[in-house]
Image 1 (cartoon, one colour):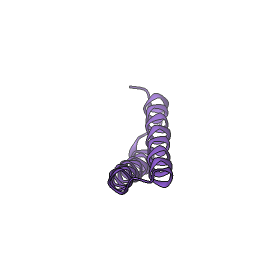
Image 2 (cartoon, one colour):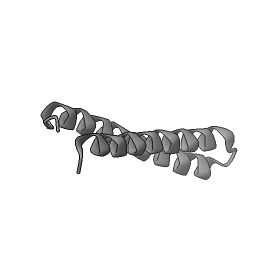
Image 3 (cartoon, helix red, strand yellow):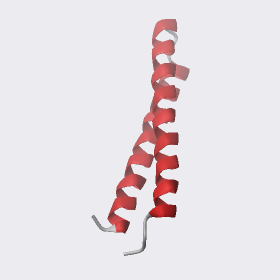
Length: 68
């Protein structure tokens, strides 16, 4: 896989995780149901963890992947 294609894929994944986290945060904020809010908050937390891990891995790859 070409280097830039790999990083393009990571960028798309990062954008998707950020979007998902924002969606669940918004859902939690806008629901009046306590149980639903807890579930949405947990989903938002998980998506944020995914986002952070992708960003970490992206940075690692940028440092170690040679130019093609």
